[in-house]
Image 1 (cartoon, rainbow, N blue to C red):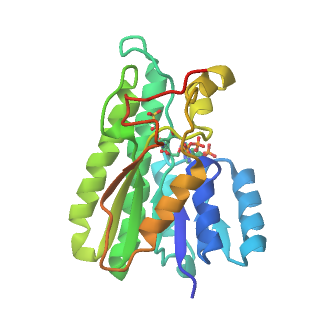
Image 2: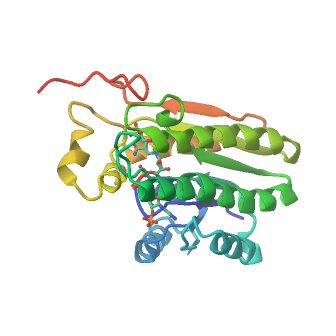
Length: 254
Ligand code: NDP
Ligand code: 8X3
């Protein structure tokens, strides 16, 4: 029987690229996001291209009841999740602390921390019952070092880093692997969402850089998921060659 990967935030960016990478390697897919039309299109396309099975699980990770209902009520044959890529998340705004928008803060905390926790908890229960599984949590270089105007986004990713460590410890006794991935700048829809559709500002983030792509990150995630059963990458930071951490960049002039 094929292995199953469950990916949150699969309608775009890292999640979408990871769906393709796992499908290309014969995994069956459970794909989550809020944009159901995109999920349907992706599932049907990947099923046809790679001869795999897939299902969509559209919900907002902030909705506690929707998360637990969807995962607890998965058909039995889809409950044997081998890998969770806990990836859904976003940044909203890049403003000084005292000027930032409270709604932006609430959405980031609700999505990146609370939604992240709900999904991890619901899936880890299924994995614990089977004494196997691998949870791959999406952090960020912003969860390792705070940058100016990063305030609450950075705080949510520091929380992801702490929760990644917590899960790694608490789930040891269930034989569950837990991996935190911390990428630097990658060109996805991330900046467009952060700057609320302002394409010029979103593009500027990558000026003078050859940033990571979603496929680069998907390849790394797949590598982490493909190691022998006794080997676990606990924590992995990755940036493009022109970025050292959340603050230091060497941008090509011009
Ligand atoms: P994208 O904007 O391209 O993708 C974000 C995904 O998250 C989308 O599929 C979106 O789906 C989903 N999502 C957002 N909010 C919710 C929600 N409430 N419920 C369910 N799904 C949701 O960005 P990336 O692929 O770049 O981002 C993925 C993760 O990687 C995020 O956690 C981000 O913080 C992190 N990250 C990004 C970096 C970058 O530079 N790009 C670097 C480091 C980390 P939909 O809108 O359909 O719900
Ligand atoms: C996304 C990377 O540096 O824009 O987590 O915060 S950064």
